[in-house]
Amino acid sequence: MVQFKVYGRDDVLRPARPALSDVLHAAAVDVLGLPADKRFHRFFPMGAEDFPTPAGRSERYTVVEVLMFAGRSTATKKAFYRRLFQDFEDRLGITPTDLEVAVLETPRHDWAIRGVPGDELDLTYRVEV
Image 1 (cartoon, rainbow, N blue to C red):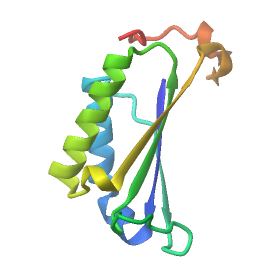
Image 2: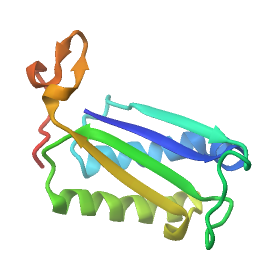
Image 3: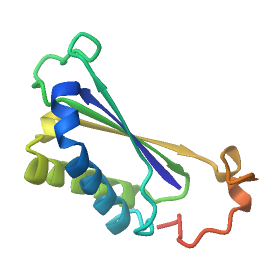
Image 4: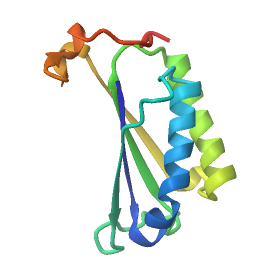
């Protein structure tokens, strides 16, 4: 299981939302091994007063939180970061300076999905990649 929360300025995030979702999804499928039909993205567009731009960043500053089952290797997570930095710049015009990514890993037993604990789910994909 992987869920994304994306935070950014309203005037930047809203118009980019479809392309941003596609970039996140492609990286999740290609690098993290998610099935193509698993797309869990939440967007949090905010006014400039609620999402101030840190020094050295532009109005395109974006924060991506990734909540996922624990088990992916450090090498896989680093490959995922590199893919996001490259694709955000190439496809969205958001430079690595304006992108922050935080991965929050949770043991499967700490999630409940579709009425069962996550460690009792019969997944169609591997988490340990």
